[in-house]
Amino acid sequence: MKVAHDFIDDLLDKINFSREEAPEIDRGIEKQELFSTDIIKHWLHFAVYYERAAVSFIGEWMRSIEEVDALKYFSHQIEDECNHFRWLNHHLVQYGGDFASFKAPKEWKFLMEEYYPGLDTLIGRLAAHNIAAETGALGFLEYGLNRFPKSIKETVTKVIKDERYHVAFGIKLLRRYCITDEQKALAQSTALESLQYMQRAREVFVFS
Image (cartoon, rainbow, N blue to C red; front, side, top):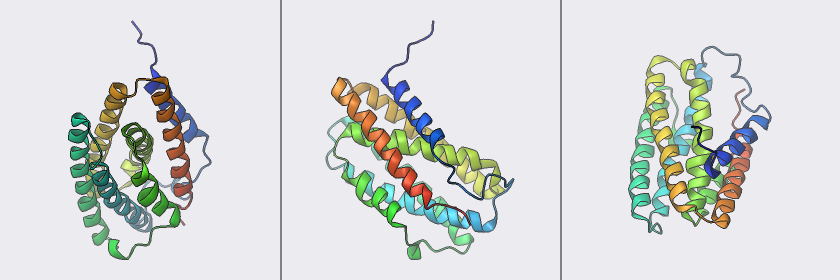
């Protein structure tokens, strides 16, 4: 028996549709069977910045989370994001990059240092980051997986596994706590708003 779509399924459909309708912004990679050294280094700078920022803003969220199960899942996510930061920063150093000197574009600083930290409800946080952001990150990682050299591919494979878990528990918690029509509307509007800000950030995340 086929299970009817619920509001989470509808939300994921809207997110995927919005992403598919977005203009092509990952210029310079679609025809490459393997990523060049410059592309890998460029991506690593952004990825390391993202993971470090995620550790910070999820940690700040913990101050106001009252739901015990959410505390457990977010605690796990902080550990995951910290591991991603360490693993990817190790690769960045190998490629001659330097996280400390990386200057994130204003679109990324807004997203990671203002927008996500400023979300003040569990529903908004789950919808914006665990659903919209993490599914977007998964899309790129899965697309690029076989274009990385072996050592980075092994790391990205581990990151993908963690990101899938973050999406999965985000869905689980939203289904548990997002009950009223008002809450569902908040989840949808926040996820799509997050996606818009992500698109603006990705427009400056291009490969020359």
